[in-house]
Length: 356
Image (tube, rainbow, N blue to C red):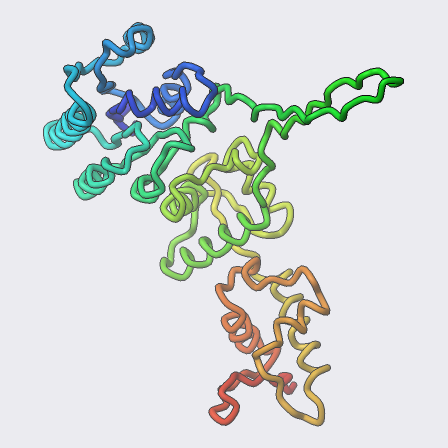
């Protein structure tokens, strides 16, 4: 238990309940998926929800059964009632951060950008902050401020209604023909899986950056934290994988990364292939430069990448861990595949085949 995260949960309940009602076809908000997601991340020691509960009588019973403390915000006129709930929730969160030092993680359930300063203050106090919000009613400013952001719609156990079916207008039948049945066009119920190749590029760049900035090994857990720092909404489930380890094994099978036993069971070390694809890519670069360099001449860096793609359409230096094509060419020069020099007259880098 000493190694578990202690979590304090704060719900801006009106924001969540109305967001679910407006964007989930009038369905009620269900607290259980949030509770299950947090149970996987640590031990929840504080659960508080803020609202004028006279508007949410049925929800109040549901939350009470889940041991959520209900904070009553008396009804006032107009926007002042909503502001009162926001202020009370922010004050309580900061107060708890000072009084309960053992709480390491704060979960702020809202899509309201007004809570962004609260998130910044909690992180300034060395607290990890997880946001939870309904995707279509969450401000674009809030997720990047958090250490991790969970969209309620994507949580396990949330039943998202499919897009409404569109009924096309039937053609007017002729007197001799029976009226045809109306055609119902149904939109795809599930959004397509995200591009794993794009994810692979981001992951390789992250591993390369972590290897360059630290002499230590890159573990899977450290890599996942780095990816969440880049994109707090990142989740391997959006790409069709049940766990982050399953994603890494998929990429290792395609020679994107290499996995080795790590310091803890289930937390392998992640590295980039030292040879293999890189050596093939260096050889490809050298062969293209040899073909283009006539009479011992040099080949300009500009436009060279297009020549490589003509020879190998799937070429991408980013999949090899390089942030730019110039960085890839410098690595090839270091590896002895080509010679690279800057030409002030041409205003460009020039490449020539490496002499044996």
